[in-house]
Amino acid sequence: MRSSGPQIILVRHGETEWSKNGKHTSYSDIPLTLEGERQASSLKKELSDWDFKLVLCSPRTRAKRTCELAGLLDRAEITDDLTEWNYGDYEGITTKEIRKTDPTWTVFTSPTPGGETPDQVAERCDRVIARAKSVNEDVVLFAHSHVLRVLIARWLELSPVEGRHFVLQTGTLNILSYEHESTVLISLNAETFRNDPRR
Image (cartoon, rainbow, N blue to C red):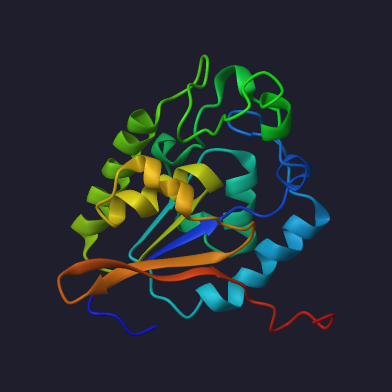
């Protein structure tokens, strides 16, 4: 895609049983479903069109498996900075369940007992962004929904709370880059199904 500088490709891992059911998944190592594996495999051809100078990946199995099926795990640097938002006591629980006791709860705007704050997640994202900018060439990141939503907000020079405005589907490509000197979001939730006969 046309832009005025290097591109950062964000890949949310493929579907898991917990992501399918809306359960908050941070440190739990939930494997990809068969659909998640298909999603991840479908990314390989698209990502082969890029010449990435840096591949960063979360240490969680679902992210590493997605990176592997996309053909890039052998080049990946594993970093804790891309782990999912730590949900603390809300690990494995859906928003609907949390709202039985806290009716207005969201991870972006409400306390998460035993977990991270938006600012703590932003600190990690800022380190990843600094690393990507230092390469000054195309980069790809394999990670998770909420951490990538905060990363998009920080790339756009917004508060981490503004990540609430971006929704990332499993197994999709999302592209950050530049227009002139401004950091921009070029694409959100791009899917690649060229080789899937069902579509």
